[in-house]
Length: 423
View (cartoon, one colour):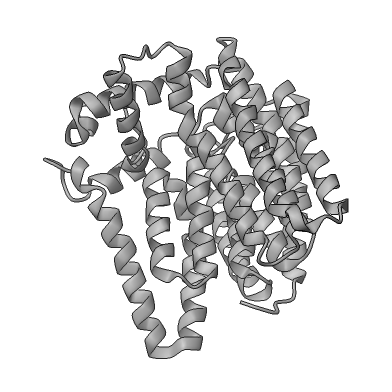
């Protein structure tokens, strides 16, 4: 909590300073300083907490197995592995480095190597935000937005302290959405394929592509159909090409069985995610045979419809609908883990850039604070060796869950009021 609070304080200070300063000529220098400081901050503090015990244990075991068994033998020999192949490539390199240099998996150095890809992804995402923002707003505002992400307490906690890979996933999602906005269709499809290979939660953003294709074909005719088809084929080809090293002796549909198993393996209303189910005291409640499943399905359909309306109504419909899909699923759908909202922190900054409105950044900050509170509590429980479940009747959790529900309602209302001026 202390380091997260410090990160938040730095973020707010940077925001205030760069929005007030008139020195526009040194924006690139300021951005470099912010990015360097964010990385040094992570380097200086990552070792204070080894990480979330279960995740660190899985990543350590998977890294060793991927290297020693080889990619072709990984899923057949590792026992339990619920992650798709995308991040296993990274863990293979981790296992390779650890083996070549005989690095003890219990050492601080190994912990650094394990967390480095996520910490680096934080900085790269901040770079992407800065580069995108400076083409739309003043240099100082671009630096401020870059700092907001680089020192977002939830972003920092997830990579440097928890040791999770959401930062890598978010980088790919941000890349895919920006490339789509810039009409780099093939590159966007390939980037999305990589995101899907890292985490199945990328499926939440698939409707954005459907909305885009509808609009693209409507405005572009036959040529647009060819472009959309070529882009889709490129993404699918990359997806399956990267599966080949893992697929020896396995059926064609093995990866889809893995996705299904992963997505259906936690039959809970919510897993420490402060949302609708947390608000009504259902954290950890089994949804099998309950109305929660019906609610969740209905809300998923509703969110997709709302996202479609938002896409065609708002400036930067890609970022607006993407933000609504992720935050809506997190707040209203069942089976949400505490970190599943992660990519929205960057997407709502990008929506702020495109729309010129402040509310996406403000609501994104609300989501950041509430999610940080939940995740820091879970991480503290893990470090203490206790069961990493927030009590369903803990008042503070019910309150922040209600705040998230209210924030999503406000976000949806403001998005539906939006006026679209550009695609």
